[in-house]
Length: 107
Image 1: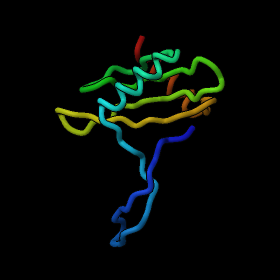
Image 2 (image 1 turned 180 degrees about the vertical axis):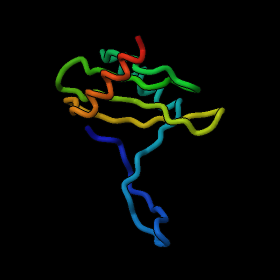
Image 3 (image 1 turned 90 degrees about the horizontal axis):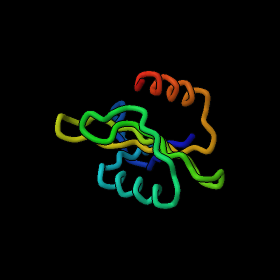
Image 4 (image 1 turned 45 degrees about the horizontal axis):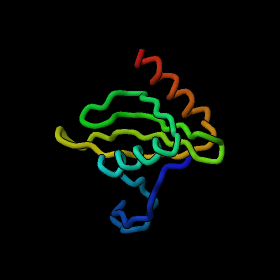
């Protein structure tokens, strides 16, 4: 599993250094990405309802050639949220446990 990250300058412990930080995507970019994935055959599985936006969901790839994506809503304030995107081909044990727990909570 791979969180989509970028190298950014961060201020930590009184010094500035380069660090890999998860990219927070806006809702418009995530909606456009999801729409494009759905057009090529991805299946969408909702795992948690969103507070402000789309919530947490997985885009399952149509074949093993493509990556699967887990998209999580991250609360910013009462008016907006952003999204973290993780890509994976095969689910790790930790992610599998999380997905099972989220599926049980949805029922």
